[in-house]
Image (cartoon, rainbow, N blue to C red; front, side):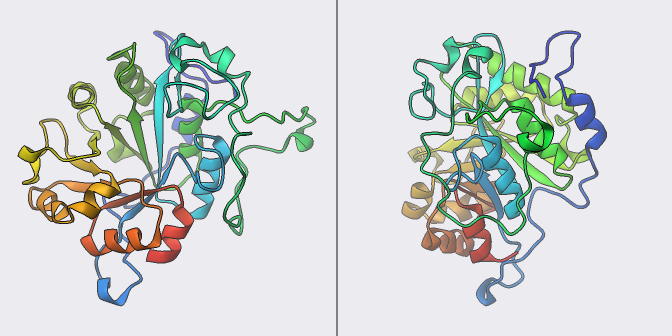
Length: 317
């Protein structure tokens, strides 16, 4: 499927099909319904397990293979970062520059999508660090089965293609989308994001199996999203907590706290402070078994991890 961004009068390729494939959430809500497989925690809803940039310990981050693996592993949700290309497409790339995750160079924002599509976004990764799930679901038919030539490159992932995969999974999934700032395009990132979500019918998550949450380190971005898509949850990501917010307060327009795991380890009482004020707590990036145990003990609402299978094995189905 050739990805295209929404333009006035035009719908993204695949959006119409995705709308037809969208199913009812069957009880999907803002917290997990399953309980922790641990006697000390029995009866407490277990945290959501969200695959950070896909199953990115095993496969290259922000690639369709990493996300399809996370779905096959049973992750409750997927997390991605989005940036705008020079020609207005939303692509799933964390860094502002291409050097770390591809064989390209320079800023993402200075390239058009066609240029990014010529690069390899997978060869930098050392390969699977954990065993494959028992029944992995392929992202698309193998080239040999279709007669298409084999392309050894791992292609850039557009948000459109990720949305197609999430909706096509046919089961409840949380999709956490982080808008990256600062950027030369400013508010256009949020404008484009909400426009695409509207095409897919995902700006009102109560009606769909895929529930979108928008995240950012930028308080300004959170304020922009609120009027554009008031039904969406909004997570303010933090690497430290300001002294005037240690009582659990969050800025206007934010309804979920998004601390880094180091913040929680250094200040475990913050989780209860946020909960007392009615906020949920999504913690990133939780990759070590002891960290998982602490997050469960503290009762966080979502664990964002590069290793979704390890976390699920540790806390139970």
